[in-house]
Length: 491
Image (cartoon, rainbow, N blue to C red; front, side, top):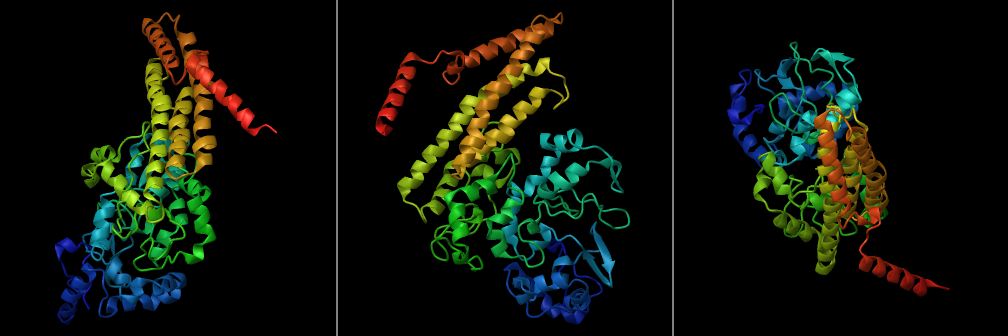
């Protein structure tokens, strides 16, 4: 039986394959293109299994319970490589590669890979040049982790932290080995030796490649957790998460089609809302096509704007369409009015965050720039502002998006308000006081301008309470509401 070339676009057949095997090649290629079954397990894979069933027992068992096994897709079909591939090597007479990239998976799963490659997940490795990675590599780390691919050293904090979720750029050394700083790595935005971006095994773990596992919330929780994006914690707090844990035996996670409302109905998972099929929508591996706010940046923006920056296909999909896609999921369990009102509440929280904290905070931080040391995170206020939007602001926004009230409030808007008024503003005022009388005319001017910006911000409706200038009519309304509350609940 013929092997499948690693890069199917080349249509190249290895020279060592017997001519007699070619008769199986074309039906096999057709079957793969439809993610269907192959007629039989190839001789090459049988040879692989002779060793691996003894030397890699757990791996062999995982493969044996997979759909790949039942479809006669074995080791060779996934790991086969062209001799000229950067990570190819000779393994007992077969040319293979350790890494199975999205290009490889696309031989049989073309639609899924096309959707995934067009998503933000596949681009997660681009964080390697972001402010987050500056933190991990320089502020948190050092250059003492030396490997052949990084002779000048790298930061173990980034290698073991950021890269394991976002993905590393896998480096192939001169002897064909993979640099230990970059492998093992299944980060979802991994940059592969063949130039492709992404890792299917980030969600479909080797070698069982279980759809049921990918549908489980804990699968997403490996990366979507923690102080800056606690989606798994929010989900667990929400009624959705509570119902999932109480009814996991009813979730039918192994169902081939897994349509909400037909194959399960007790609770949604992350996959239900962001990827999986409904009565009206097919499965999608672009996890952004049901999201109507991008809550990652300082200011929440519409997702098509973020997609346009990366020239992703989603740039042509308006947020209104994406919202209708998500509402289609919601109405599988909820009434239309319930869904519409939820989005009214969610939009209200985004408006609050953007208008009260993000826009003025961003402007104030920019105004403080000339008064700061030039190196990022060498100033106390750099940390304060970063955590305001990157941690607390995201928690509030994500909490509202997933109906996690504690994360919206106590871990979100409460922390935002507390630190905006007790850290951020005082630190800005300290910069003004320190520099307004400076002999450096530029610094003195910047301090005056910052002072004016602070005063302008505090005079706005959102912040007047802080300087005891709340509108009298609003103050009266609040006092009346407080009295009514006391009267309603008095003994």
